[in-house]
Image (cartoon, rainbow, N blue to C red):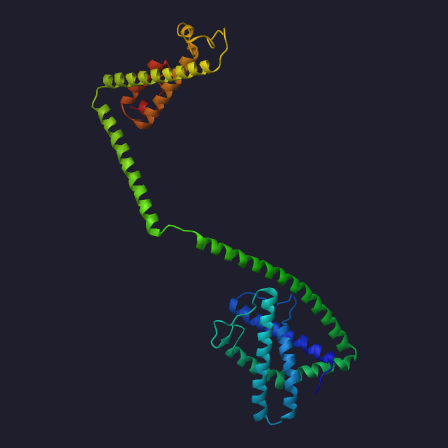
Length: 353
């Protein structure tokens, strides 16, 4: 029987809701969490509404015109599978072109066509079409008929209300999907650029990198062994001497270091004085070299003493880190501090010796 536009719209929304409910339940049970399988924000899957509505328009005359079920059932099954698969294929192609994304993919199924449709899903569509035509549709026809019985204008009001809400939902959903599709397209282009850039780079082979790392590690190990051997030799030389000899040697080393530092500092001061000329200055800057060689000093005596104390303290701390529990530390510190005029620093470990 032919349907009016109001009845067709009501069936479209009913089957869209049933399709959304069926897919949401199946996917939520499989994933063990709620999954909204609809493209829209509302509880509708328009592909089910379109597919089943077309099936009803084309196959209800077959049901009513062929009372023999042995003939009518195969016809309804095959025609329903073909119509539903065509709607599914066209919808998938349009959504991919418009939004640059796929909402379903049957590539992992056997006998698929571009991942948009496949044989097993088409057979399922045929079974659902037959079930809807002979069992579900008579129930919905009775429901819509009862709506007319309650109020003659109620189906029209419901159809208009659902249509307006559906169009608003479609507008918002399409806008969001287009934005998402543009972002996905930009990401794909960026990925292609990165891939092309990486392909153009000449990266070293893994074997070359491994060889360079091994060579660097060998050089580091050799230098470490040389430093350890040198330090071990110096310590062995100190252990072989007496306490007074160690003190004399360390005192001599400290004096040499201080003399070297004083000479270096004086040289820097003379160079700075020659670079900046101030004639008749009391420090001697700006005067000829012969006039500044006698009776003048680059640094006052207080600064020299402070520098000597600083050097002595640094050498003492360095010796404490190298041989903190050795009996040489006391003699070493005494010698350094006598040269630098500082008090002997004590360590808690050396005090217990």
